[in-house]
Image 1 (cartoon, one colour):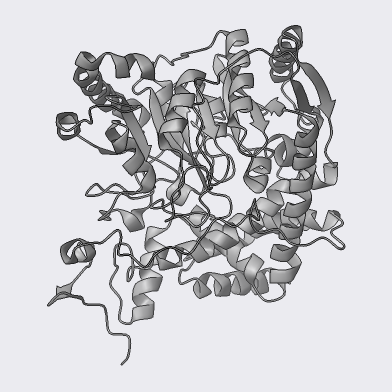
Image 2 (image 1 turned 180 degrees about the vertical axis):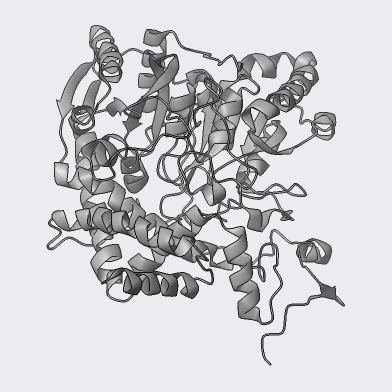
Length: 98
Length: 470
């Protein structure tokens, strides 16, 4: 992958996460990934044939069914306190459907 | 120190007011605080009893505090006031602690230098030209400077322990799940661990007992009894089997670090411990940091998808919903944080999900086998917390593919992967700046970890070490 392709690829990844690398930052992230790709390639030096993936430190069950009781209730005022705009007890958000 | 403050009930208000004033006085030098909290209201409603009654505490700004700004060091959350307390804050209040500030941290806890907070860098109390380490740099700096006896931090890769070493304090990352993460702004959920920072092992015992415990609101909260760590503290090393991590020692470039560390090992032997040098598979050790990059950043890119100006965070203007999100996230995430999210997206992209993230998770299992196997034979694992003193702000950093960077600098991730308790204890100095020793034990065996730490503290005589901020 040449540098322009790499730049387009990385910018597409960034945009899939809803942000950009504007201006000179685009060249900077390409440069950063030269090292990041080499570091991630170190993983390939380890033989993992037949090894299962591990996602958590422990595999013991720590969640249980509980009684259907109301807990940790927020008041309406608390629930709306960080909303940018409210109307009649609802959160107003920017229009999504045109 | 915590015990003395708790027992001198008349002096509690004075102690907390002094801590509040000292913290404010240090702010121009350290820049360790994001939000100050006037202690008066809390002092007026202290519980009758509590492990931390009247003890001034600094809390990392990724722990939600009801009615008090909680930014996680990010510009995107600069106006977020939570309507609820995190469990760790609930526990602090229940035990009578008095919060005097929310501390600076690397943005969203993603960093090791404490240079990416939207409020600017934090300075090391021992040398203002050096970083404190991150991401819990604000909490660590305030404890090191003597402003507070205790602070809360979080550790996903080394974010309590490495700054603790670089600032000369005790930094404890307990067993994964021992402290509830409920109400803590997440970084990487399979690794995130809250912990405590103090200037003595005794204080660390009390602090951990106060904030640990089962919480059904955190799906990974451990269902275990929390012991009285202080009552169990015993520095007798007879019969203890300790392993020194040879891979870390071999990567050292600073001979003084080796000398100081080996001096402590000799003293532990004199106290009756059996100490052996052990080696993990070097290929696995070199892969620890790369596995961390893949796993932590993949989890982070997903965990923080809701910081978009719509669900959480400030909102930048835009014509469409997509524009609003793009503008908000581009403008309000530091480029270093966008870089980390991009690594996460890369590890999750198409076939990379198997080739990189899947591979990293398999390597994680092998890492766990190495460390768990060692801990079946040994009571604790020792190593220098880092290979050097705190870097200067303009330090270019080590060769990213060197053993020094990947193994000696990255070994603290081991205990995030397997969940073991791990702590850093001051072990000495180099060029006038502190060095730390890392002590790790079996999951849920904090007692053994604290006991070895107590022996080290007695050997070094550095209990209560405090930086004089110039």
